[in-house]
Structure formats: C-alpha cells, structure tokens
Image 1 (cartoon, rainbow, N blue to C red):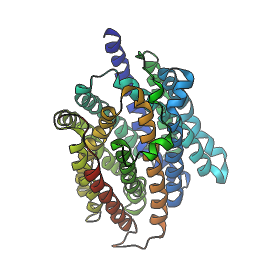
Image 2: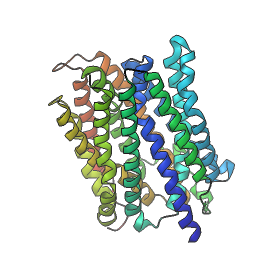
Image 3: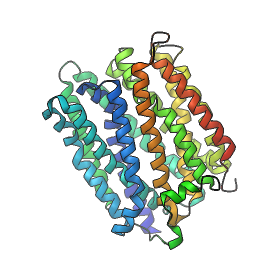
Length: 407
C-alpha cells in the first residue's frame, strides 16, 4: 500500500509536467504548420499520417511490453525519446527548404508516436493503483487538476505567440518546443520513480487484432470500439481545421484563438471531477450516451455567428460535454477489460480511434479545399457533414453498447 501511494505521488507529478508539455504543443501544432507554409490539404494530411501511424504503433504496445518484460520500461523509454525529439522536430524543417512541411509532418509523426506509445502500458499500470469503485472520482479529480495546469500552459503559449507575433514567430514557436522538451524530461524523471505492480499474464489473455475484429457481433467492447472510431472520424473531419477557420478565415489573432481553445479546455478539465462522481454512481454508459449525442450538435452551433463571445460560449458547452465523454470512455475500458487484457484492449481501442481520426482529417482537408462556400465559408458544409456522422455513431452507441457493472 505504501508503494502504491508513493507511486501515485510520482504519477501525479508526471501528469503535471506532461500537461504542461501538452499545453505548449497540442493546440499550436496547426498554427505552427500554417507558419511553415502548410495549406488545408497538408493540414489534413498531417493529421491523417500522425493519427494513423500513432494508432498502428499502439497496436504493438502490448507485444513490446511482453518483449521488454516491463510496462514501466516501455513507458519510460518512450517518454524519454519524446522529450529528446521535440526540439529537433521544430528545428530541422528549417534546413529543408521547399520540403520543410513534409519533414515537419514526418518528425512530428515520429515524436507523437513515441509520446502515445506509452499510453496503454501507463494506463494498465494505473488501473492497478486505483480500486474500480474509486476510479471515476480519482481520475476525475486528477483530470481536473492537470487540466487546469494544461490551461495555464496553453494561455502562456498563446500570450507568448501574441507578444512575439510582430517580432519573431520563429522564436516564439522555438521557445514553446524547447519548453515542451524540458517538461517532458521532468515527466520522464517522475515516471522512473513509479512502482510497477506485477501483471498476471495468462495464455488466454492474448488475442490478435484479427480475433478482436471478428468478435464485433458478440463482444460489447468490440462494438464500443468500432462505434467510437466512427464517432471520432466525424469529429476529425473538422477538429484540425478550426484553427485554419479561426486564423485564416475569421482573421482572429493568436490571442483570440487561444481564448477560444482555452474556453473549451477550462470546462473540459474543470468539470471532470463531477462527471467522475456521476459515473461512479450511475455508470459510464449513461454519460457516454448523453454526451455523445450533445457533442454531435456542437458543430452546427458554429454556423450561427462569427462573434468571438458567442463562439466562446459554444466552446464552453463543448468542453463540458467532452469532459464527460473522455472520462467515461476511458473508465468504461477499465471496467470491461480484466487486468491481464487491459493493455491490449487499450491498444486496439486506440488503434481504431486513431484510424478514425486520421481518415476523418484527410477527408476534412479535401472538403475544406474543394467544397463550395455556403453562407460565406466552405467550412460550414464540413461542419454539417461532421454533425451527421457523429449523430449516426452516437445513436448506434446508444442502441448496441451496454453497461458492464452494477450501478
């Protein structure tokens, strides 16, 4: 028990530094690609390659853990390589002339792959630290605290870009990537201090990706995975292009862009604790059903106005819904998969979600470029199509996925 408590403390500080890293990088990738000269199709291609490759890498997470015989060793190695690569990912494209966008896409994909490779193994370890009945409350509390840290880093990044916008954007993005590298190294240090509980592996715990896919009719979790992937495809048709729409079409400043992103992040992370308490009491599936349907309507709200304050309100609502959806999908996987299968289940879930995100982004890039303008913007037709796909997946989630524990 003492080891687990101490390990949770180190895990918390790993989360703090990882949240700072994400705050400096996650929402500024598209603005950085635009700065390097990427167009709409290139933005779609960036997200397609990145999400697809990350999802493929995660399929092998459980097998890599088996090879190195330690989840902790896989996590720390992947995080160390991520920290090492953030700065070169930014710097090297400047030496590649007309190919700098392509080089950035390749390097960012590799760095993201290492960053995500650790996730299934880390989640598998963490699931053994927290009793099932307390997971919703704990991960909700953790998500809220780390989310507020993420928001502070995001705001700092936006202020930095706004301040240096007319001086040197190159320097501003360079500072952000350097800080991301530093904080990921600090994250890695705390991960090395974590305790790895023994995992009881049995031959029956192994199942291939093909075996998993064949279980779609019988398996509640397989249906959940495929429908979430379809939902994410609809989301990704527009998600990477909000930055393009805000910065290029609406001509908002970097600071206004940051305010919009921050609004969603604040309600996402600020309300996770309350969603966690509700999930422990009423179950994860009820919350997934509610939030997936409401998230499906969010894209349509962007059509009614281009006013900054109206869009901030839309983002606050979106963040509230995503808080419930993100928390309960993760907790549902913890509930549905036994400890020995959990890392592999997470890997396969992330694989199909990543494919959905990648394909959706690629489709969205072409839609943004080639769909005719409607009410002044071609992005609006993409928003409508995205909403329809989300609604379809959400309705099927409501019909075909069941709760797995008594609530």
